[in-house]
Length: 195
Image (cartoon, rainbow, N blue to C red):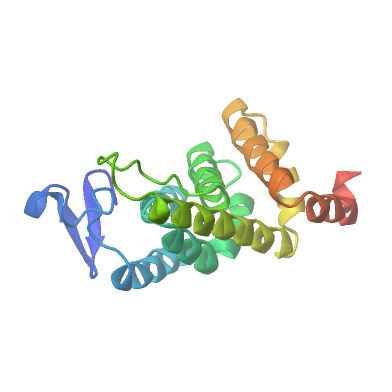
């Protein structure tokens, strides 16, 4: 997912090859392949020397996470600790911070269930997907809050003097408060820098 390119099975493909069927944004790789792709991107983030390379991997993961609640869960399960490390390590790179904060917000928010084109079709699947999505978002919020020093890291990033970073972070904190108020309160009180 580097400026017009996408990684597939270890090979960088140009977007639009094969009619866009390879791109995550168009729904190319899903389910069985997405887990391997998530692992590959998380590994790439761990070893990347440049913040811009980590930001590119984060954007690719965001494209995967937009696919389904299961993809949201997979991305967050494998990458939560790495995302926090990026927030700590790349404080001077606003682009990397914004990409990472957007991915965390995406994974902690309920998946946006697409509208059906047929108004007469049954809405049961949509309702079930909405419930599953809300459960996955709540699980991801709980996982973030249970990660060691996560709240302290988020509060530290909040001190960065960039309007867009602060807005993105306040959005995440709002989601966490709406989803897990008592756990947020407990974590904030346990954090020495919050007082």
